[in-house]
Image: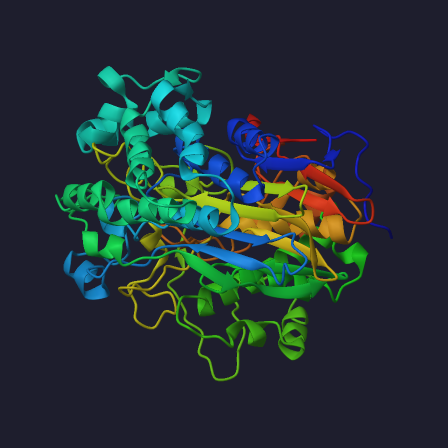
Length: 600
């Protein structure tokens, strides 16, 4: 049996050219990135300019008070191995298990300033610009400053998110209501919205370096202003006042100016695994990245016809491999300095043992593996109830009235004519995360909700440690040279939506656009990374463009299948280099009607 061929029709072309390509979750960010390329900037200049614009145009999916993970390879002759851009801030010094337990909490809340990690995105963007870009910081930030000051048309999804949390804003977060609901009215889709406070913040970063002697010093001055100036002071002071959290109780934030000043974004080596003759590179186990690598290694031992997501057999195999890998994620991953974990997870013997656990029927158990010398953490298995279930899984807005958010994120990819290629997944600091800081025009994120108030967990809440994030862009290499950068929003679904795309491309021969357009699915049989940390045994959510016999076949195998609608799952995008032809390409997601690719 051969892999199901892709349909002749795609929602848009896979773009091809030789000059440069960009793709992202918002057409304006893509256009900005391509504009930078057209004006002589490289991929790093372009991705940073587009990234700051994403703060403005997708504020329900990311913000300056959030975080990011990137992965890139330079196009130089001495490019070397893939590099991870680390923009995940740690828990503040005052964020400890005893403190939150003393506040009467058994989980870190999903909304409110007590769940704020130290913001990492802005420092990471500026670090990448300093070390690998060529443009001045003022030129790169000019796009975002313009959209924040002069306005941009509001997305329908942003309007829907504000509407959903409008009661919270009116009743408990008046500073958020003032920014996002002028005169008490939720702005409609297409309304021109402005954020002058954030424009002033960015202008302040540029001004901080005006007297510096060179480009590098000007960018460092902007980074220093971010970490020690208005942002650090205003955010810390504002969140120190008790305010409503998703728990329904009021708490004060604990982040301080010293926490801001103590964080530096940085670079790390990628971890990788082989699949069908390619090397797939990810960030380490402080993200969920190695779970994708484990799933790919499990699947690499099956024939192609067992991997086809358009068949019941292939979909079952993929879902079961994901369940095993994600159970290992929840049992073992965290910022605990365990350098040998990834090697142990990807060892031939361990992968073979996990592969043998995939049977003909769906597992209804949470099954982490047994690694020598390590004891798996076993979190509580809370089942979905009430509004938690209503916001899980598919589509936007995935936000509850309490401000609880599950999986809202952005993504951007850029490749240039010099062979530089980069994928970045920014998130956090959603407009519904915590109350807006009036002087800043944005709020801080809630990434600490991914930590546990249990010292036995590898992702326990510990001051100075990073929460285990869901952000997870991907780089694919052939013979040591990058051929694709990709990623998607989606929280716990990020690896799950990337996996069928990669399988279809690397095993099935699909183009990127064919693989993005193809109907997909994911499992909910995992420990949710977002508050209130639920688990749905044997749950599968599938786009109903998958054939009825596929969905029926999954149900017959014991999966609890929920149809999500025809175009509901995933916001994948990607760029790449076809080195055999010397051609660049880009592809973007039609779902949500806001992602786009551009290039020539």
